[in-house]
Image (tube, rainbow, N blue to C red; front, side, top):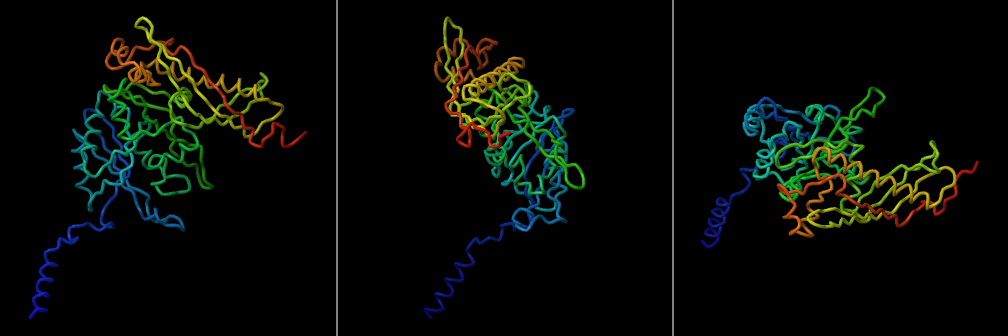
Length: 385
């Protein structure tokens, strides 16, 4: 009798267990990797990139029959309306937890059109603050249809995982939703979003191919889009932020037209000091670097290299700063430096959360090259003529 009673209690407990009856099987869901957002004629235009995970975990190579992704498109007066139109043509549950990036057009960032978009993604329970944000001038659909080099999985693409590119060259910093919100809320209420372009420098044995490239910044404020700082003018930004970064400069040797040397630079630190005099604010910057030489021709010495590095780094910084002044952008976030170090002075001079800047506001840039590493521990050429 006791055994029968225990059996009945056990069966009752099993029936009361919630189990996993309401859980969707992974193969019965669609996974969103990226979203493209445009704004035209008073409507949001949404591009939804659904990724195919069939190629992600295969060590022997991708499945040629499987498309790496599909792009859905819809319009709506709000972003949510456009998404619901897309849901009507989808035959499985959509999972947002693997979403990695949002790609904005310029129009989607104008007139604060992006604010409700950002707010919607932050409120959705499946999305995360680590979602990366980009801007582009090119066709959003064309960018989302590009597959990585050698047909790698889209989870390894530049937009989904830009940290691999960042290790090689760091003047374009990834910006996630968390950093975007902080930058828009902190003085001077602007953020540099990486600018995505289509690069056509690659080809296979069959035909030319396209790849995405990060080639500058689009600057966004709380009031909307402010303009672009393109590749050539953006390089100085990497030297002016405190984070340890890696980059390169090409210097001219011996003042000769055809003798150049490209040097790898490791930025150790950046210190920006605000100087307040009679309600006028200027800034002094000190940048410390190490240099690594990969190869050169002719005779060189460390003094020549140091002089060339200092000249080029200062030139990069000046170009970026002047490009920012032209579109009324504080590219080096000097307003925030004053806010952190002298809030009383900041309150006196700030207008709408940022301080007015002129070409002379960055009054001094001091570049220090600590070490020049020749790589082979010698400045003698490997091959002698």
